[in-house]
Length: 64
Image (cartoon, rainbow, N blue to C red):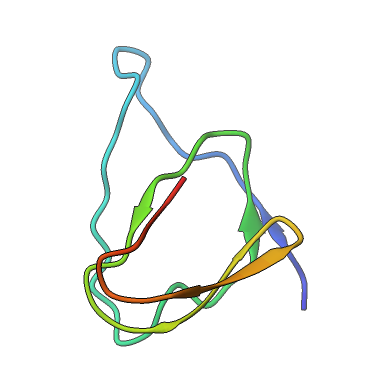
């Protein structure tokens, strides 16, 4: 599977942005970027890939 490289668009007068995803499944694409990403799992269970690590997740988990 290919890893998508991208830059998160942030306006120059902001240091933090938030984005809400409402999908039937967790974001399905491996991706990487230089920006820090905070992910809060509101509901669901599954596996979360970060770098070379794979973590199980449950509702309420937070990943930085």
